[in-house]
Image 1 (spheres, rainbow, N blue to C red):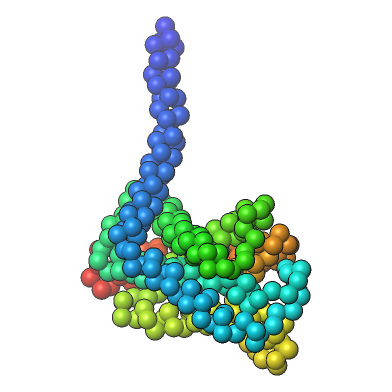
Image 2 (image 1 turned 180 degrees about the vertical axis):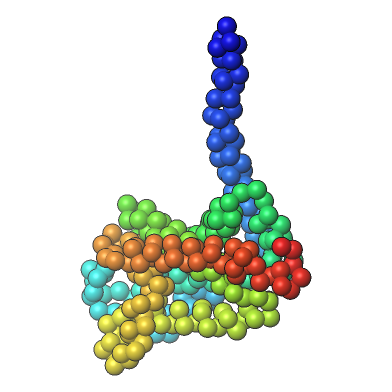
Length: 295
């Protein structure tokens, strides 16, 4: 009798145990949707941000590439099967520029949110801190990919020949997403150590321009080595941005990108892990409490 009386209670406990993980997953997904929608709505209200994201690479494409179209010859090297004009070569690098600048701009937004208190409030939500930062990273990557796709469409309209409408286009989209996540994670990492908005411009000058110019975005690696710029060549080889651009470039033509995907994914993991470590209240993010912020 006693055993029969306890059966309904034990069944209730088991049912509660089953529904608790489901509620937790639903709560986590709801938080991701809220964070991503917040970023999308904020971006939709900043038309100047989209215009500036497109104007910058389009100026390079329309002016720089047009001026040097017949000056710089790109030899027949992988992933190309024939000689190509310079604008076709730098197009993947300009796509990478869009991803890079948006990733760094997200870093500025993180610093601003942290100073204004919105980020502090978000990080006090009853969810794992790493998940909240991952949601923020996904929102940044989504905006980066959308802006990059908008640039690609405009570049094709002005006459740049890019082989997008094929199976290789799906691989290129994967490369875009992973590159956006890596650069967004780098921006997340930088936001840990940029304590004030006033320090942002100087920090970005030591990140954006070296990463972009010391890469294969504008010129092939073999040209750097051939010209005798050995130290620039070596820096470009180990630049994560180089591997993001090369993955996009090789994916567009359906060629094997080699170790580039592993470098991008490895850097993504390292950048995000260190950012999560830095946003721990007992470590990097805890420095805010010394300036009067909430514990």
